[in-house]
Length: 184
Image 1 (cartoon, rainbow, N blue to C red):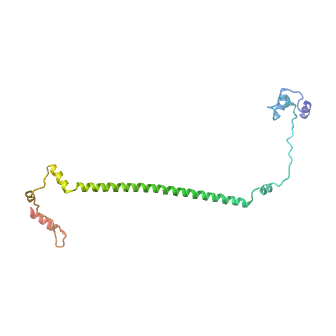
Image 2: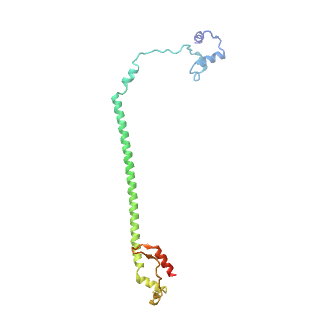
């Protein structure tokens, strides 16, 4: 085999120096997995790989094998329908959530109203008990207070009012000033 390698590599030195062996081994793709002596014994191809063209249908074959336009339209319609259903479902959940929140808030307000009514009725009862005249007289007597006698009520006299009104019932500034000056 070394003769085959040397005949194919014309123009190269026939002596196998370390440099020549390394170049043959480096051109072999799998040289790192194979021993160097085996890689040197393998034939080296100077030509590229052979490619053959097979005539075929080209793009027409891929279009004919794909999905038809009706199936693609149906898939698009189904996708749009799924999106619409999802949007409706999200909207329904949002409305249901808002309804539940309003119901809870209404329940809390009803509870607050009932509490206020109860407190109001309790305050009315307390006010009626505390405002009884007999209870007030008893509390005043226990504090040493008494109702005024008739002699004290005669001593309270109020001076005449200086504010005057005219014949139509309107306040009269000039008559009021004159009455105030006369009272001095």
